[in-house]
Length: 122
Image (cartoon, rainbow, N blue to C red; front, side, top):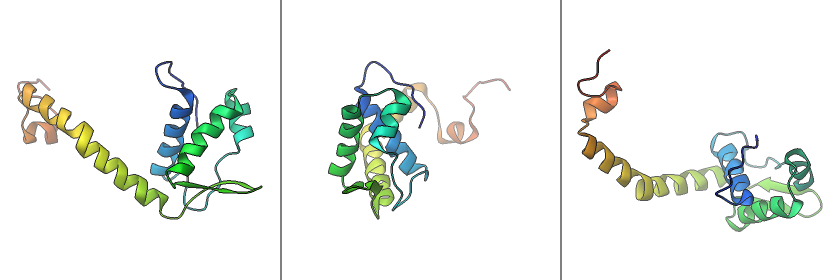
């Protein structure tokens, strides 16, 4: 994980998103331990409560499990659950805006697949 906090979103949410990205990218797999709260707090100069809050949301989402005394671990099936959820969110929230923008710009499927705009010069 690399820090790059923005001031418009709470840090615990940004940290949660970074862990979710690691899961989606395959950097964390089922059964893998997450970095400890203390380690993340020290590495990124965060309050341990901030890190704990991010991790707790992952537990609440059933993507991570607490193993008392030994840490947090990615659960079995978390990647598949997360991927399905992200796909559904994309289709519901992001795709309609993209379709509208494509329509407004007058782009065709061929334009999109070729990666060039109509009338663009190579």
